[in-house]
Image 1 (cartoon, rainbow, N blue to C red):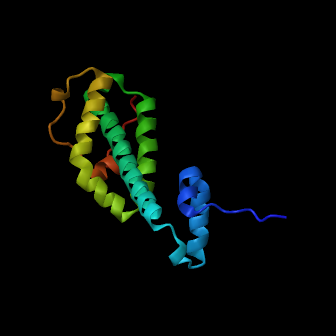
Image 2: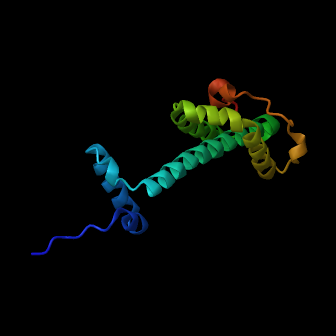
Image 3: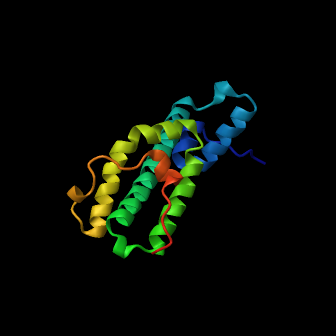
Length: 152
C-alpha cells in the first residue's frame, strides 16, 4: 500500500485553494510556523482584507444611491427601495463591527458618495449635478439614522 503524497503547500495553493486553507489552518493550530506557506499566506490575507474593504464600499454606495433616490424622487418611492436600504444596512453593521473596516468606511466615504451619486443618477435619469456635491448624510445617518417613511 502506498501512502498518499500531499503536494507542497505552494503547489496546493495553485491547485486547490480550499485544501491549502485547510492545511494552513492545521499547521497554524499545531504551531507549525516554520512549515507555513508564508508568501501565499501574505498574499491571501492581503486579498481578503482588500475584498472586505471593497464590500464595505459597494454596500455603502448602494445605500447612498437609494437614500438619494428616496430624497430626490419622492414620487417613485417603493418598498423595494426600503428593503434594499434595510438589507444593506444590516450587512454593513455586521461588517463595521470591525474597527478597521469602520475606519476604512469613514476614510472612503467621500469617494463612495461619488459612486452613490453616479448610481442614483443612472437609476433616476437625473443628472449627477442635481445631487449635492458633498454628502448630505453622515456615516452614522447612512447606517441607521435616516428613517424611510412608510409612505411609499
